Length: 200
Image (cartoon, rainbow, N blue to C red; front, side):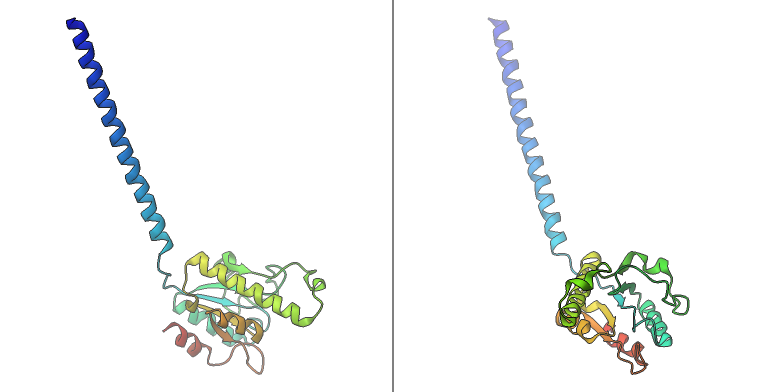
């Protein structure tokens, strides 16, 4: 009889301990779940970074008026902007771009070279307007990729391009733009002031 009483007490204590174990385990899981929810909420509501990005077209933007192009790159560096390329070329072909004259290294831009579709893409369009609109949308997609990759405010992404169609679409979507409309080709003489007026 005494043995049965001890066994009963032992089982009862064991049962209480088991219930307490389950209670604290469930509470710990609830805390962890809450932590995860808070982390997701903080990540989703994270403010855009205050950094900047200078995104250059190649042809008729960096390939001519080299002095002004070099000045633009230097001014972007001075403002601690990330540098990148956004070209309609069908691949990351930079062999004809005077990188040395521009004081621009491939290492500096290699992670942010955005380019167009394959070489046969032109054959899929029935008009020059459709093709040009496709290029503008493709370049805009690249700007959004940059925005999301670096969590940037679109106003802190400066897109340099000679084609007004590309500039117009980027501007309509909230990105900062500098039109490379020098009458002699390329960027204008006041490009440093243009950059400063955007970033300050």
